[in-house]
Amino acid sequence: MIEAIAKGVDEGVIDDLAKTPKDYCGGAYNFVTDINNVAVKPVVAILLSIVFTMELARVSTKVDGDRTLGVKMVADSMFKMALILTASANSQLFLDAIFQIFNKVLVNLNKYIRDHGDLPPGGDDWSKAAKNSIGNWDYLGQAACLVILLIPFLCAMAAQVAFKLMLILRFFEIFMYSAFAALPVAFLASDDMRSMAIGFWRKYGSACVKNVTLIMGVYLYRVLLRTGSFYIKPPASKDSFVGWCFHNFAGLILLPVLFIGILGVSNSIAKALCGE
Image (cartoon, rainbow, N blue to C red):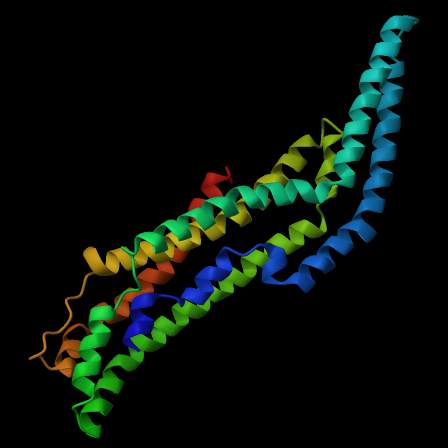
């Protein structure tokens, strides 16, 4: 129970943050890419045919009998159309490139922290003190400790559920954007809809960077727990662990609340980084 309060989340959940969508759930990733290829790309092809026709019609009105200028303008338009068609056929690569940019930051951050070992899971001192004390108590003392820690433990479990739910929603968001990967490419063909394409990729980038801010939030929580104003001194060997739990009851409840607050702040920071 003490370790659950101190860690925030398990290491396995943190490792899930560094996974690619395909590694996290290969079946869902294959499903959304099939949706993009089978259902979205045919619609995009129709949109592009309309936009290209309108573009050629617009160019023809500006030629005014000048063949040289007409050839140049038509060639420019055809080259633009070829680029957009190529981008539409490989639309998933755009999203993969955006994801890999932020995922590289996340992997390097996680590797740096673990290699240096200066941010181990919190509560080590608490856990050792608890094991040394509780084993020597009778059932009455152990029951008292259980009752005192029950509410902080339930708060910690609620925080872990909130974190896992945010993780699932992040990947769900990424999967939904991947299902419509070809659509923003069609928006690029029109000057009036170009901002919609940029907005689509900005929101996708926000969904990717949220994993980075989430893992930073977890480690920041552990730093505050061990060195900040939220630090709770572990009990000495001569102290009663029940008395320590009772004395720090409010602080033990505050820690999971702090963790949930950090999750909310990390979400806001991710949006700010992508200009939302």
